Length: 360
Ligand code: GTQ
Image (cartoon, helix red, strand yellow):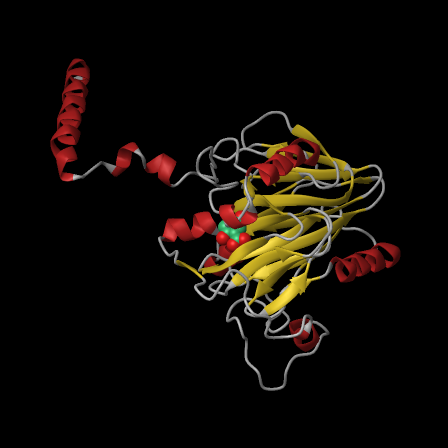
């Protein structure tokens, strides 16, 4: 009996190989060969952690400024590519990030697309972005939204270069094959139709119009969440309360009409790491992009299955990415402020968001 088993199994293997070969031209393939990889016991991202020091990136941005105009480039952006996803214009499987430069007097022409964009201002003041006829002036640390399918152009009447982080859901819309885009045939800069600050007056003071419904559907009616306000909130919390053991003082941005996320696909956060902070580790299913606003510190990341963590020493204006389910902890001797964004709203909408707050 036993002696016949190897023969039989060899026979089955060759029968299988023949089956695979015969059905392949019919675009059929066996699940059992890939099942484990398709439904892994825990997320197995192809992404890796990454760190872009501003001192390294800035000279390339300025060279791009000399090499091409904003007008010609349409958007003069250096894409932050995940080191393990080169050529895919993606910082995680679902997120796009880039650094955009506008020089004094330039215009990035008006267009619209179904991809949602956030702008997080990294350097310089006085550039503007216009959304549906309302301009918003940029200052470092401001979080600005371009809702899906709204006309937008960027320009600068500043005396200095202005650089901001673009965060978009480009890979997500590519995954769903749901992207549409149009150039504005009315001209490069849209006509100003509303006073700057109108949206903020209507929606940005813990009040809302009595009857008006959401002007941008699932996206916040506030275009700009100014850093001055965010900073004030974090400072008051630092003065009067104890930090969270994992996050320091961390708040999420909200859509004032719903209390939910300001954007349907991108969740945004700001956190203050107090002086001497050594955070406990955590991991979460949403891969996350950080933009360092102020101060210095360390991001310690450990990939699933790895035995050691990698430490990134970050300073102000640096950018970092932490992929899904990587053990993460933050520390800072002298204090720091970090902006971050992820695809958490999508995870939550689908009921698949997971977070573990680890003890050491
Ligand atoms: O500003 O509209 O970084 O459409 C990538 C695509 C910026 C923009 C990007 C875009 C934009």
